[in-house]
Image 1: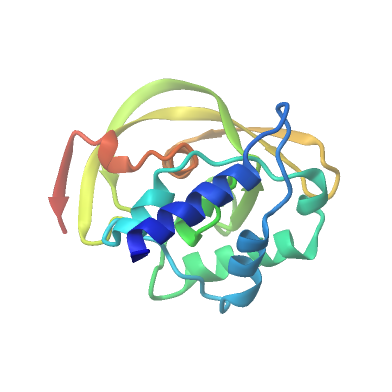
Image 2 (image 1 turned 180 degrees about the horizontal axis):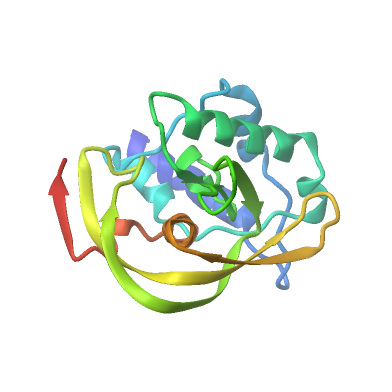
Length: 204
């Protein structure tokens, strides 16, 4: 079995093990737990330069279970996503689960709308509404190295996510550049890259 066929088989198995059952997410698989717990604090960032990485980047993501959100495995993933996006080798403003090999609905976003520009991690995240002026601005992506593009985005979004401590749904209205980051990162969770929406894409 060659490497590409093997990767397809693994992805199919992971998809089956993490897909929704009667509308409910399934627990983290052994493969996902291994990726989270066995990597260094700076995780591998999946890129379109590798055909096998691209297969995972194009997969729609699923939610976490309540049990997983309150586990050490989820806390480790959240911590490692923050370390990875802040590492000088990446130096990003956001990162999504599939970019570190985890097909779950989680993003880390730099909150330019808050004092100190802190990062937040948002599991089971969705954009419930998008509105306001549509702007066309420059974007890049850790998973599309060496490229930039001009992408249309809404100016305001309503973000919903699950609080890992209370397991309650939290909603947050976000505007400006932070809203653009949320749109970019949540696109990843649907298998969409900014180049799919860009007016133009060019070499840095």
